[in-house]
Image: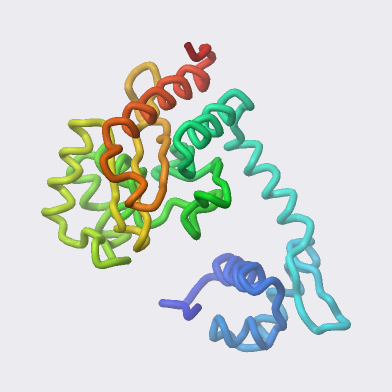
Length: 256
């Protein structure tokens, strides 16, 4: 994890936390090597984080691990984006009804962020698609829902910032090709990705909207492409039904 440019103290502290989290604990030397920071700087940052309970120092092993303050922050985040039991049941029902992994994303700032996933050993979620995931929107079905919602100028700024890197042989990396697909997504109200995010997997998503038609989230499913072949109309109908019920639940109504 090499820095692209000099970082301020807050950014360096966050980078230290990320290294410790990724490694499941790390020594000061490991952190310094990973971040290309001087060892005295790492000790200063790490000890400050220990004093604030963001890290703990396991002296017997000369390593740092995550502290209790981060657990408290995590609980607060889950409460802020937490979903009600009826909404959770809708996503569970979607999984059970399709036998596909089912996802709910909500709009947080300018991102559609995964907040709930239901899967099973027979149809697991896509690797890396965990709570908080919102990356590479050009290659995910719910990401395309977000991009299709934006005006062309706003989408241009977004894609210029995040790029369109190729993840598989099927990832759309040409801007004009993506624009054509996003127009179709906006027109039909459903997005598909077929082995664009991860080879051997496909996904579909539809938007969840508020009473004024504003985008507030998306529901999605993923499965092996062969399990989705010929199922487009059925999958889209199930997603639309769930999205409608989730929308009503999120705004105090009752699903029919």
